[in-house]
Image (tube, rainbow, N blue to C red; front, side, top):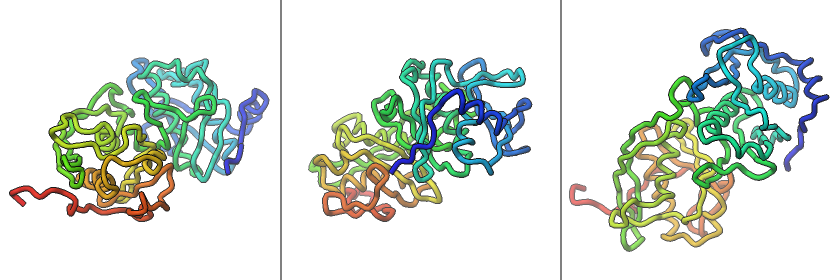
Length: 315
């Protein structure tokens, strides 16, 4: 059950600001001083930079979150940085659910340009993820989950999802060559397909791989899609060699285009092609205690399995 923690009001903000001041005294490099940083943008609107601040983590999480938000809306001390928060975007409320911070913004959120929105999202997630009680951040707009520009749910976001927006060009891209596993013409086996492309630096390579699988093969002669067309990626992150991937409920509520094992191992085998990933933990809306189509248990991380892959002559 969600526990309502706070609803913005001018009176509460005054009290909060009296309780806690996040004074920043110019730019400092990460790793020095307090170790807590507020993220602002430069005049160019292309990059974010951390500015060190003081925070009292003995105060309640409600007070900490409220104070951090207040400081993000303005830059003190005449710094050459600008707040990422547009004047008309308001934080209506927030909840903390099992270390997941859910921020509910006003409808003006949708008025941000694509570049400004990514910077806003990156700064907010990077900043709030430093709080000890927060392990992930979710965005809502007037009570509805945030949808990204491609129509997918933003889902749970983490600081590592935006590392390339800090101190580098937002519009920069990384070129990648990845191996994706799609279904063969029978739908019963997997075939490896090499994809050469670029992805924006506000994404991770894991996001690029999973989004490419959701989009399906660029040429049908290279293979068939393995996942439902309207399936959404909610979140993906890698920790200690395990890649955690959460999909929307279409994974269990809709008929898969291929057998369950083929669908699952198209994801698992594609992600374990990446050097830092040994296994993949799949979930639906964050829940992994599921047996997909009564065939594939998802309650444990799955390792690479090439038994579903068509053997080539070299093999």
